[in-house]
Length: 172
Length: 221
Image (cartoon, rainbow over all chains, first blue to last red):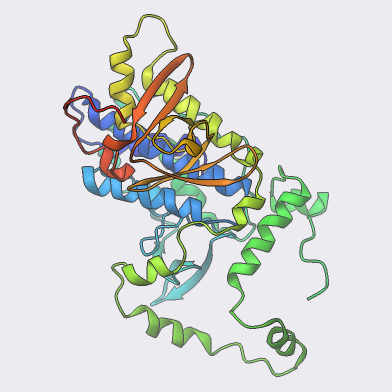
């Protein structure tokens, strides 16, 4: 679920060079985190007006670009690269499963800029790429996650099952 | 098109498909409507009805066209982006002030977490230093001093911050656009009141977290 839990943990995990806690970075990450949750909050309150959520995500992207911060892929996938709007399948984008060259791809299409992203889905490849880094990240002590916004998004019934597994592995 | 847009799952089906239903039916319906509005191609109502009532509706043609359009420049078309109204339209004025209160709660928690505590013995210097780098979207700001007297006393939740301007929504659901130049703003958090001199803050909010502020001569307004 795209709540506060995986967001905080996954952004923290991306910092593989774990120094003694550089202060500026932590503040910047907190700010990114806050902007992401604010965009979700605004969309949950009012699904018609997506301009504000898009503005927040655009600000987020500019900050990350300016300060060169690495983001976890699971968070990057929910932002559109073209128009930088927040992608929620069922509301802002569509998700389909296709078969191409004998493999299963998930195709996400943003409805504003018609930009599509393709992800390979292989049921055998369960664990995610940075396993040795995950061991390193778990030893360090993560910040307490930010509290969830009050409302939850409806889970569309067409979400393929393979999507659930990578999210649960990033929980660990 | 006049039939029901949204119909909730019954209990049995919900259990079978393992779908959670937190929201009330109205909220869910709002989401479905928004999605439908986004996905429909841009034709007039008459043309849509026509399409649906005729029997021969060609469905397979659109995929090739989409692929051709995608080939142009995938690195962000700036002129087209701005044209697509990333900013506000007037409809948000129908959206009440109460819709942005959860955003304000979120902002309060974020600032509390940033400062690690409420008000024991922290010097105001630390809080100010952190506020410079922090994000102000969702804060309640008010204008204390300004060269233009009609701006003084405006209070509301900050929705957007651009290079020269704050966009604020007041309690009467009015969207106010206030220039930063020649204004002093007040931000309050948990008993700490900070004054922000707008003339020094003429930066986009993303640039602000990357810039180091030097203490130059004190300018009043």
